[in-house]
Image (cartoon, rainbow, N blue to C red; front, side):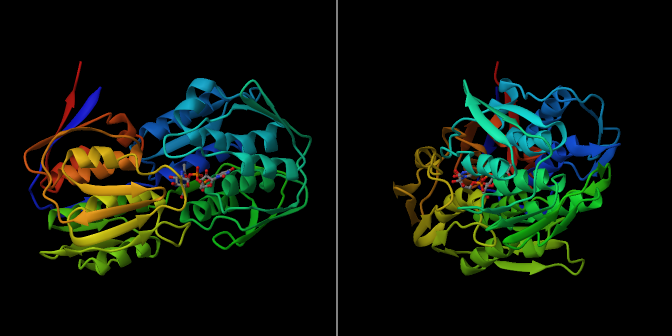
Length: 421
Ligand code: UD1
């Protein structure tokens, strides 16, 4: 088991480069199930979740090769398998994104329910309704979703909630369906747009990605293509918070400013200076000597991202005054609060709201990452905690951050990775 040992109190300075987006690369990889020939993905982050998706795809007959760091070549090697293994789907909910592609190109899919994840119950009802609307027969049998269909048929789907995963699954399935599919109240996250761009590069006919109405005209075949993954806006936001919480000055490279607007707005409201560099793909964050408290409410894009809620909760412990954070996307995303309290934070939660009284001095302790972003938030808090903090259960964080310890050390953090036997 790996843990991160951090000695807090050092303002971060310098430059850091953000990797390709985890939440963009995973659906794109799933989509390669539908493509003939080889696909080359660039800017692929080195993450546990990417490795898990490689394993899921290998099981389903997609061969993956990486000759150059950051590049992943995927090509079909076998086509018979339609069942995804429980062990892998259990590990990563995004494995469920193979449902749409498998149904569209192999006419069948058997995928274990991803199950409740720590941050909420996270059902897949919208994914399933979408597949049914496209003409699939879907049954739940001993914890496994079995779906089958002839060629899927274009349809009109209204999503009760703009679910990112459901939009992606339906979008992928619709590309090979007969006729036109219209997805209303679709998710508009940049990762959905990246998937649509990738599919269009492979020959799909998609209009409106990035708006709440997406139209897909089904085609007969999609071909392997080359695509560069968009930068990870959550990793970028995490480093921006790292600069703010430590009172530092950090340039975050390989970003799309447009994707970071809600995060930039909150940091500026807190008193940080944030400027876009001339190159246009880098941001510099300079922290003031004292940060102001702010209120935050998470929303689907372009609202404040739920994935940045935990890092900002940690940051709010270091602002002057009372901050109120409201989580509207997932129902159980305050799992880090008891751990933050071990460091000395003054936070109380009621339902979907957390009230943070600042500024509290934090002191190092042993804490456990409760989930991916909660773990990242504890690392951020540790950067300002006096003495040493040990962040355990680091595997959660490794699912979504590439070389986090090296990147933080490059900015002057006192951090070391320790392997416990
Ligand atoms: C994706 C991201 C995750 C991010 C989230 C919201 C990936 C791999 N993960 O997760 O990092 O936090 O978007 O931006 O891209 N819901 C239903 N029924 C469904 C599907 C979802 O009720 O069929 C609910 C969920 O329980 C949750 C909300 O909708 O409360 C949002 O979930 P969704 O947008 O689907 O998130 P994911 O795609 O799982």
